Image 1 (cartoon, rainbow, N blue to C red):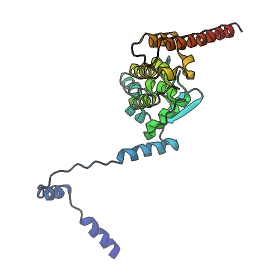
Image 2 (image 1 turned 135 degrees about the vertical axis):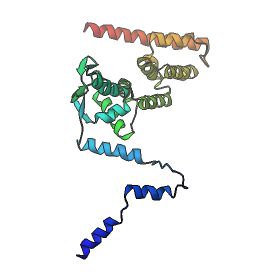
Image 3 (image 1 turned 180 degrees about the horizontal axis):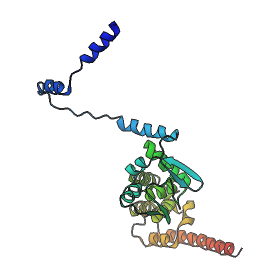
Length: 257
């Protein structure tokens, strides 16, 4: 009996909405304060990542090659303009959107992303769910391809930052070629400037043989070529010509085999 009475008393202590509003109005001298959590977004991502790892509430599967990635379309649409367009505009118009030659509707259970690597897609999915992504010279091209396809701007910025920091005599030509493929003129200019400044050291590296004819011509025509006499430039050019001719012969031989 006493337990029932205590329960009734506890509930009777709650005020109605009008009573609460009246009492708060009487204390309106305190201004409204907005609180922002610095950890809320991390917890939100962590929650989505746990759901993904446990295969809970995933409503679409991304496919690249032989790999499948169950994910949440809401999160994809929130961070990728590519998927937002696919999932929202198509849903509103009831039309069919196209992805690399294949047809998908907003309610498709799986989406095949052709022309991108499964390894690159794995890195991007991990970034979407964690905000972290490891980048190396061996992975940066795959990551660039997927992030550009899915329009993930933060990852594109990370790749640019990584490649700029990675420019040295052993990587500069590789980085120029990456910049050419992915349309990154700022990166190409920085790598080219480095080669012009360090041309004597560069000509001793294995990167020399990777220069295309256009690359070499642009270097030799530049007024910013540093610290070399005309004789040194001639010797470096002759070395490149010999290696370029050797590579061309190998290509022709392999074509006939």
